[in-house]
Structure formats: C-alpha cells, structure tokens
Length: 617
Image (cartoon, rainbow, N blue to C red):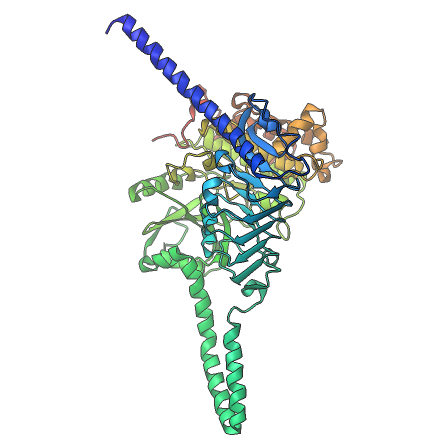
C-alpha cells in the first residue's frame, strides 16, 4: 500500500471517528432535551412553574441545567442527573419521556396534583434511579411489581396518595432501600418482609394493612371462629363446655411454638439464599488469622440466627452485612456479596490477595466461605459503627463529635487510603469512599471497609450507577468526571474523600444541606463552591466547633477538603499529599506514629498510573 493511500485511509478513519464521537455527544444532548420537552408537554402547568424557566429555544450546551428543578451531572453538559419538581402545582398523570433522560438518578414529583397509575414498566423508564419521591399526590392503582427491578433504589416515598392493593413482596429485592414510606394510602393485606426494618410510621393510615409492625393480626378471622365454637358449646351444657375448653387449650398450647416456627420459616422463605445453603452447612470457613478459631458455615448461621433480617447492620451495592454473635460473646461482621460473577478459583485468588492486606486503618478481612453460589466474607466487628451514623445519625450513635475526634478520624482514614494507593502490594483503588464505609472502633480509630470488593462485582456493570454506592444512599461522593469517562481513578477516590472531609467540618450530608437557604437545591460540594466564590467559606463550618480554640485548624482543614473536591482531577492532590496536609494540621495532638509504613510515592507509583482498581499481579 502506497504512502498516499495510507494517508487517505488514515484521514478517512479519523473523519469517521470524529463523526462517531460528535454523533454520540449530540445524541446524549438531544436525548435529554427531548426528555424535558416530553415531560413539559405531558404535564399541565397552571402556575407556570416550568413554562417561565424551561426555554427550549436555547440549544447551547448546559442550557437545560439552568431550568427550574433540573440538576445536571456537570453544569456545562446537557446530561440530567436529578429532576426536583416538588411543589410546583403540576397536574396530569405520570410524565412521559423520562426514558430519554438516560442518566437520571433522582426523580422528585412530590406535593403536586398528579393522578392516575404509576406506570407498570417504571423500571424501563427510570432504570438507574436511586431516589423516587411521588408523595403527596393523587396517584391511584397498585404499587407496580416492576419497581423491584429499579435495583439502585435507596429511597422510595409513596405516602399520601390513593394507592390500593398489596405491597409487593418482590420489593425485598431492593437491597439498597433505606428509606421507604407508603403511609396514608388505601393499601391492604400483610406487610411483606423487607431487607430493612422500617418504622411503623412508614405504613400507618392504611386501614386494611396488617402485620406485626402495626400490631394488627393478619389471622384475626380464625380467632373469631374459635370464640364462636366455645360460645356454641357452652349452650350445650357445662360438661360439653369443659370438654371444648380443654380441647381448645390443648391445641393452643401446641400451637404456640408452631407460630414461632412459622414466623421463622417466613423469614427464611424471604431469605431463600439462606435456606438454599443449609445443605452445605458444614462448608469450611477459610480463616487468615490463626488467632481466630476454626469455623464452618453452620457456625456463621448460628451466630446470625440463620442470617435473620434482625441482624442486618448494613446494605449496599457490594452486599448485605450481618452482625454475628459467637458463643463466647464476641462479635464478627459477615458480608454476603451481591452479584459476584467470579468463578470459584477467581474468588479464592482474590480472597488470598485481600486477606493479606493489613493496615491499622483498614477493616481486616478475617476469612471467607463459598457455599454453592453464595460468597460470604468475615470481618472484624467495629463497635462504634460508621462515621456517617456518628455524624448524622439519631439515637445512641448519633451526636456531636468534638473537633479533635473528627480530626483524628480524618487523619487515620487518609492514612489508610493513601496506603492503599501508594504502598499496598497490589495497589488498590477503593472507588466507593464515603462516610458509611469508614468504620470506627471503640477508641474512634477509623477503619476503611469494602476496599478491593469492586473487582468481585458483576464485570458488565459499567453504567454510571456502578459508581454510586447504594449503601450510602447518596450521589454526593461521585467525582464529576465519572459521568463522562466511567473510569475509576485515584483522583476519583480523592474527590470522594474530600466530600467526607466536608462532612466532618460542616456536619452536613453530601446531598442535603440543612444550613443553606431555602431556595438552594444543590449538593454539599455545590454549596461550598458557592460560599467560596463569595468569600463566605467560614459560614459553612459546623457552629458547634467554632470559638473553642480550633478556628485556625478548621479553616485550614476546610481548604484541604475544598482542594480535594475540585472539579478537575489534575487539580486535586494525591492521597499521600492529603494525608501529609491533615497530619500537619493535627500535629499538636500527636495522633500518628510509625509513618515509615507509608512511603513517599515515586514517579513510577504516581497516582496517574493507577488506572486499575487493583494493579494486576
């Protein structure tokens, strides 16, 4: 082939590539614009809440991101992330065109005047939604079974509608669901067992719903029958009455343990996987530490009461975590992996790698068990739970932490993550850093969990929702470049860690800012950016920390957090640098020692070269 022909061929291929890229970019833009146009056309807008703002004449990139109620993945890119159309006076049925917003992860239509059924194929329209709020409307009909296929759902709010029928038992498949409310409807039948135990208020004001949580017996008819028999027998005479009462008492005494057994069987039926592994209950639990006694699968089953829902302490994209109580009173944490697609040999190989990863700021993997298609991981139990619960939770675990404790946690967590990036062999990217995967021991020493588990998940799950950890329920941790590249990088971990630092210094949640103005609808990072641009950064600091001789440290800490959460990956520091920054801020507290285990990264170990989640051996 001549040089001229090669040149012409190269030019042709380049033109085809450019056309392909431009076509894809424009399709994404057109698709999301079409989505909003169809939504606007399908809804009545008597208050002009949308009409005045949704101007489709402007076709420039990022124009729709300035529409009322529209949040984009990036302000300069027409790619819709969330639709927040609450309390806009909208009328009509469930809007059309949502399937064209292919990157949509949040839909809020609450407090409007919408009616009609919820679409039976709703998972096709919004397959990657993590938060769905249809509350305070007039939706009718049944809750669609198809909702159970919206597998990324963290929050489902359907209260104050006119929904009828039963709550679908298939919703148990929503492993990430942590917020659920169907109160004030016209639902009936038994409340199914779900992965998370929701409060009574989530089901209240449905006259025909029944279940233990409502203190309404679903078998009330049988009791009436027994009463009728007793009364009828009494008419026949004292002797017959005594006989009948004796018989009834006899069967009641026999029935009491049966009820307990039926309840237990119901739980196991819902947890079919737990029932399926009973046949291999003597499967070996491979342990990495000699100090831990030898165990079999049956020991884990006994310690978790056959993996009873009561023992669930966390759920997320990587799986469900159970608290296990051993006979000697000690605790373990057992994670059942979700959607692990690896072969037995691959799984064992990965376990051998992760089992050797040891650092004072990582939750140690103590062992694992492979039973049929199930994969169970054994971890050390952390007494103080998650950082998220300590910062934002209510009750015993939630509460205000003093600044030295927060600083100690940030330094330890940074040290653990920096070690994974720069010193661990093989080096590991976390990919799902958040305040819910930073666990705390009894001394508030932070331990990072879930490291290395991304490789065990479904390898074909490469959509943007792969990078949203459903266990934490928030999109606020995801670096903006993920929406464009779908590639995990070290700087993505740095961004996520920056959001954790912002949580620590502000006390705010990643996607719910309580101290912002009522008109503000953005994330924690967006709020911080707004304040920074207006020289008001100090206003974001948690008020409970100010005026206690920490003000200088707080401002320095805030600046480190902001630099981690910059929109450009190249502008962010490495995790080693983040650790050094934080360590310098906390120098007077003498938190850290033995820094020799964390080596300075060389050119060959620079974060830009860590494109794999775990570097191949």
